[in-house]
Image (cartoon, rainbow, N blue to C red):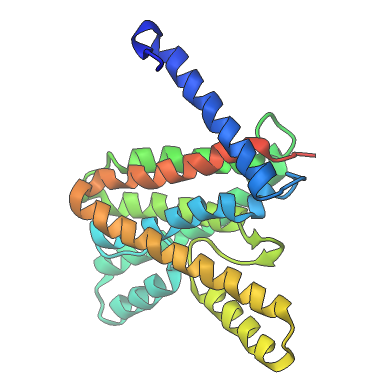
Length: 252
């Protein structure tokens, strides 16, 4: 048995990091039989943690930050115009800010992809790293500044939804369910018509992503009750796992 008292903290961290990378490589090569890492970001191994974080953020922003959605901008737009009709302009601002931040997040993510594609890290890792920093900052924001917290979370979610938009070549979303639900049911219907198994497999992938998103939301609900504003750090931890896995991706 190894006695870690003899080693420094840095040595211990390096030891466990090496073991983690060894196990990860074993899963990729032996279990999942992934021979090319060119599209590793499209596999469930990466997407599961990204999608869990997506569901988590929506639950967190709704439960802890004034019942505003970080991801579901359709809901925010409905509530925005409801408050405008009621002449409740102060309340409508709480929903307008996330919508605007979400749009800006997509814009920034596109610029990131164009500007950083050939640098040291994969451009998707820069996006994840930026998201993690945003979540750390959000965990420190008091309730009186919920509008700022929601703006940052919506900005973060928008970058994520642009950055991770395919799974095994299929278009999908990690931060919302409506498109995934439509695609899942469309493929299921086509399978019943044609009996081609490819449609059934596609439907399974979409329904799995929806389930993972729901589990993320459940995790967000449970942790928010126990940890309060700091619970968003768990979502940051989920993203960090995908950040590490992406070191294996072939950047071409």
